Structures are given as structure tokens and as C-alpha cells.
Amino acid sequence: MDTFLEDGPKNPIKIQDNTFRDGHQSLLATRMRTEDMLPIAEKMDSVGFWAMEVWGGATFDTMHRFLGEDPFDRIRTLKKYIKKTPFSMLLRGQNLVGYRNYADDVARLFVDKSCEAGMDVFRVFDALNDYRNFETVVERIKANGKHFQGTICYTLTERRMGGDVFNLEYYLNKAREIEDMGADTLCLKDMAGIMSPFDMAKIITELKKTISIPIHLHTHYTSGMASMVYLEAIKAGVDIVDTCLAPFALRTSQPAVEPIVATLYGTSRDTGFDLSLLLELGAYMESVAPKYRDYLAKNTMSIIDTGVLAHQVPGGMISNLVGQLKEAKALDRLPEVYKDVAITRKELGMPPLVTPTSQIVGVQSVLNVLFGRYKMVTNEVKDLAFGLYGKTPIPVDPEVQKKVLKGYKRGDVPVTGRAADFLEPELDAAREKIGDLAKDDFDLLIYTLYPTTGEQFLKWKYGLEERPPEVKGKTLEDIRKEDEAMAAAIEQVCKTM
Ligand code: CO
Image 1 (cartoon, rainbow, N blue to C red):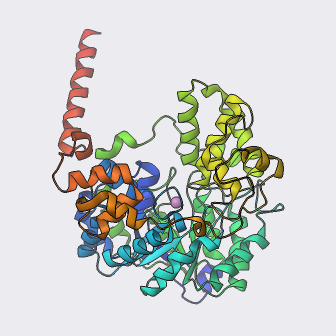
Image 2 (image 1 turned 120 degrees about the vertical axis):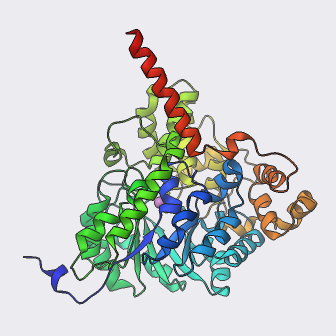
Image 3 (image 1 turned 90 degrees about the horizontal axis):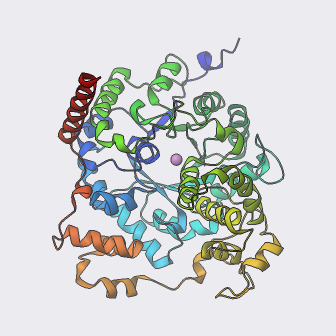
């Protein structure tokens, strides 16, 4: 009998809560407002989470663009209520919280200002796992005395871990590289939810022998394997896992915290959390969730996407592919696109599929299927083939490289240096352009990262323009009225039947 969990020395699993970031990013298009986080903020602080992920990823974009909220203010406001638990953010390496590489001056200021606003733990990743793209931000994270969590984007080319590229050796080598960079912790990040339980048992066991920094696991429930993955990883000695409160968990989000707490109760890896407190917090989340129900996918009965087990395409990427094909009135060609994604991905150097490479490969595959292979090529594919995102896991196919770089504005001889070395500083020009509308460096960053929507936001922020109603969002009162109107309409129909 397996008594490992009962007998071992006390080694509580640590939990990072992602409800306020990846939870609503995965399920509700990142639309949760700060005002709905505040009522439970103090209680969340008392649970004992290792950290709370509250920022980064898509939050910066959606907050200023769709919610009319100042992204930096969210950190400051939450910090007033959450005093003990460190704040964590997802940082896309040199892409920061945007979709392209920013120049080093922008990257430095961004990290400095995020620290000043109250950020503690920086989970840094790069879509190509090219850690030269970490250098600038890591220097600033360390200089500010903050926690650097180095991330490996987990991906596969086969049904299970293995093959020529993304095999066990690949991950162990990447982990060594990250530890050598001075990371405080290592994160294994599975954006598509394609990790399988026994592969994780193996990889965690081997990582534990290879590196000495704590190991943090991040996965998504998308394919349905995530809870099994966590259990095997916990048995193998993983140090930290990411979860959400149940209402913002499962589906394409993280596993729920409550069943994990219950599962580990009384074992050597007991979280020590108060389950009834978690239930109370979950009940609160249920009470505000109706405000965001329009964003919840409800087109299938199943809350897991078993297709992922076969095609391994991440959820966010699927919705983009579907959107593009719908626009071209060619949704019936989705199966062809899935096939092309595998081929195009390999030709473009086998990047892990995560922002922004998931979009780059996805858009090109749709074009390939609609117009013929590489008949139309996006600028992003040209940049990638030229080396502007960094080094791809395998070389870009030379034939494809030649084809896409024909007539490219930077020339047809690819570069091999660090991506940001090819970028001119950006801040001075941005400062001049935005002028007095940016009152401080925080405003300047919002504008520099997102020139069009950032400028619009600053006009709202300083009362030069009124926030439109859709930016203000629905209240629970609006939802109640919608439901009453719906009930009345149904009653009317029933009467006439
Ligand atoms: Co995630």
C-alpha cells in the first residue's frame, strides 16, 4: 500500500490563488472589476496562500481598454486590504504585458513601476523559452529586491512527453538555465492543459534531483487532466501549485482549491487551510459572478474540451481560429486549419503555443488554408523567421524562411542576437507624443504599451471624456432587471400557448 502521503515528514503543499487573474482571464475574458474583489480581499489574505496572482497577463490590456480602470491602481487598492500575502504577476518577458517586444528602456521602467505599485513575485516567461528575453526584466526584478520566478513554457509534439524536441532532457536543461539565472523559484507553465499525470510525476521527480530551487506547477483544466496532474505532482514532491476558488476554477481555468484541500487533509502534504473559510469565499464569488455571465462560454454541455487531448491547441487560440474562420465564412475548414497548425508550427521552429506565438502560428495557418501555403504572410511571421522574437526551439525551415523573407524590410539574412538589441529606445518619443496627458511614469507606461487605447483611457481618467456605458459595465441590479424581463417574457409566451 502507498503510505507515502501518510507517513512522510510534514511538507505542506503551498498554494497560489489565481482567482483574481488567470481565473477570470480564462473564464470571463478578464473582465472582473476591482470593486468585486474588495469585499473578500481581507479574508483572502487570511487563507494562507503562498501568493495571490492579481495582475499581469491580459489584465493590463482589458482593464484600461474595456473596464476604464487604471491597471496600476488595482495593485495599490488591493494592497490596502491584502497585507500579508505576496502579490504575483504574469510577465511576458520582453513582451511585458503586451504582444510585441518592447525596448529595454520600457521594460526597465515597467518593472520598476510595478514594484513601486506593490508587485512582489514576477512569473517571467518567454514564448520561445529563449531566456535572453528575460535578461532586462530580471535585472530590474533583482535590483528591486523582488522574487524572480523563472518559467518554462510546457509543450508537446507527441501524445505524451518525448520526441526529438520537448523531451525530459529539454525541460531539465531549461530548468538548469533558469536556476543559473538566479531564479528564486521555477515555474512549469502549461497554458493548454496538455500535461498528463504520469509525465508530471516523472518530470517533477527528475527536476528535484536536478535543481534545488522550489518548483511551482501551473496548468489549466481544459482537457480534464489537471486535478490528476496535481495529485501525481504533489506525490512526486512539487512545492507549489496554482488553483482558483471553485466558481472561477475548472473549465479552461485552474483546478479548484477546495477538493485539493480535502484530498490532502491529514496527509504529510496537508495545506492546513480552513475549508469552511474557502467555502465562504466561494459563496461570495458566486454572488458577483452573474455580472459577468455574458462572457462565460456556454455553447457546449461539456465543461472540458476533450478535443484538446487530440489536437493540443490551447483554448484561447481555438477561439481566435474560430473567430477568423467565421469572419471569412469558412468555419467548415477548421479541421484543415488544425492540421496546418502542426505543420506551420514545425516550419516556424516549433515554438510553444502561447501568447504571442499562438496567434502568430494560428493566423498564418488560417491564411495558408484560405489562400495557399505562405501565399500571404503576416508581418509577425516575417519577424519571427528573421529572429526578432529570439531563438526558436528548432531552426526555422530554410525553404520557408527564404520564402517569407523575400522583400522583407529588414533584409533576408536572419539575425541571431538578443531580440531587444534590435530595438531603439521608445520612452522619449512616447513622452513627447503624449505630452501633459501623462501625469507620471505610470500614465506614460499605459500610453507606451498601448498607444491608441492607452491615450483613450487617459482621457477618461482625467475627465476629458466621459466613459461610455459599456465601459462602466453591468451592475447586479441590471442583471436582476434582465432576469425579471426574461421571466415576464416567458410567462407571456406560456399564456399564449
Ligand atoms: Co494560465
